[in-house]
Image 1 (spheres, each protein chain N blue to C red):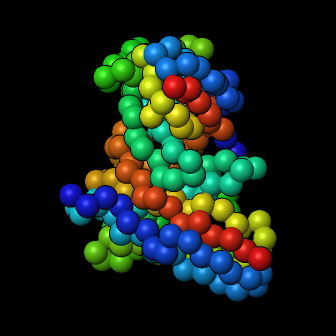
Image 2 (tube, rainbow over the protein chains, first blue to last red):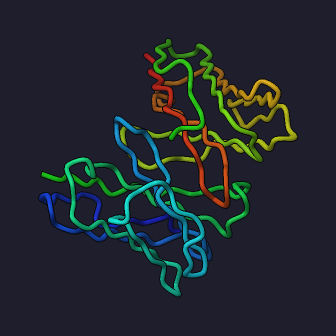
Length: 115
Length: 110
């Protein structure tokens, strides 16, 4: 089975621009979560989608948004980019959400640099 | 915000030695998971331990959980250079939302 794939792998943007990142979960997985990783804040939960519905959202401003399609693929969007948005964005998939009892499988991440 | 805090933040050992990493968390949990991350890449799931379990083994990995102390430890026995990575504990909150600790950077010298 193919693992979680994320595109693009690397991205350079300038302040004020917007960016869209894509995540394809493992075949059959219906839950997709997004995390941001920075040296200063570590790994932080962004949001989780299941059956095209956002189930949980972390403590991030409204500039961060996401969606999930009927094939479980997910996208996240960051508008009006700030320097502090430079980070590794990780996507994780699992069969279904189940209170943390389901193993989440992570993709390789998208490294975003905002100049 | 980080629920878990790993200790130590960095650990350097020789190949063949055992490596122990500790994780403390603040609120009650359903499960605790350990992940490995190689050099800024994606996370690899190592082991999940449920709140009603005290110890779990997987190959050279041994995880313990003490819910009364809100702490967990990960032991890697007979370490190899390939074990060099950052190790994170993660606790569940609502749904699939994992809260990660700051991680332990493990260096295994050949």
